[in-house]
Amino acid sequence: MDTKRKLTRQIHIGPIAIGGGAPVSVQSMTNTKTSDTEATVAQIRSLVAAGCDIVRLAVPDMEAAKNLGNIIREVSVPLVADIHFDYKLAIESIHQGVAALRLNPGNIGGEEKVRAVVREAKAHSIPIRIGVNAGSLDKKLLEKYGKVTAEALVESAMQHVRILEALDFHDMKISLKAHDVPMTLAAYRLMSETVDYPLHLGITEAGTANTGVIKSAVGIGALLAEGIGDTIRISLTGDPTVEVRVANEILKSLGMREYGPTLVSCPTCGRTSIDLPAIAAQVEKRLEGIREPIEVAVMGCVVNGPGEARTADVGIAGGKGEGLVFRKGEIVRKVPENELVEELFKEIDAILNH
Image (cartoon, rainbow, N blue to C red; front, side, top):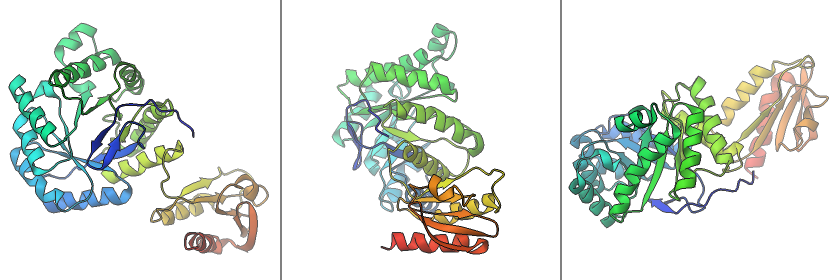
């Protein structure tokens, strides 16, 4: 997909370029205790293995802040410290070596405290993400607008932006999150017209994988298709590695990232005479360990299957008790139904090892 993205100013989180035409990056957040080095490092490594570019960690207290260095020494991915209210946690996180801060300058005290954080951030080239959440909007803005609106979210973000700009700090990106998809879309569209800072996309509190994946795909996918957004995070209840896989699938579906295999599987119909759902599930499971981009088709009809999946690198099409193995729409051989999956993966291995 040739999506014309809005060109934002560029910042860097460690070696990762954000904005300015750089590829959209995938972020996630650990749900371990940051004070627990072993558990946090293990989870970060799992996130990286799943395709995560940047990892955020909660820093609720000084114990967590002081342990960041121990974690940073064990991983290769840039880490972002998530700070609320206490400016000392931000300064300690910078000294420990984090690559960025998630911090709202209006929530950490007076001007001198903000100046102290900005001074350290500038000295260490640490960008700051301003993150506005619909669930924690300032009471004055709620009174002004009567409820949470896209305009209220943008005004809230701009209050924080102006605090940093007044201190000549411009190394920032912005997020405007709500669980309401239409409101989130409106807020990001408005912010995109207001500033040229990079935007971090997300649908917050999206829910479990069942519902959250749909809300995130609709909201984030729509914005990316419009050319809005420089980084993304899928917020799901549960294992954060699922967030990373979903994020990469969204980018892959828009042609914005090559990410592992693409499975093409037809819907069942009256012509289907094999257990297509079971076979497709088996193939999908075995594809999970493959990182190379390859298109694999699982079709239920030998009549139309190879032709309908002509662009697939390799595929199978089932008939009654048997099926076809094909490459690029051309039939390679006919095999019994119970051998279809194994024969398919022989072809996949041959392509990947070529």
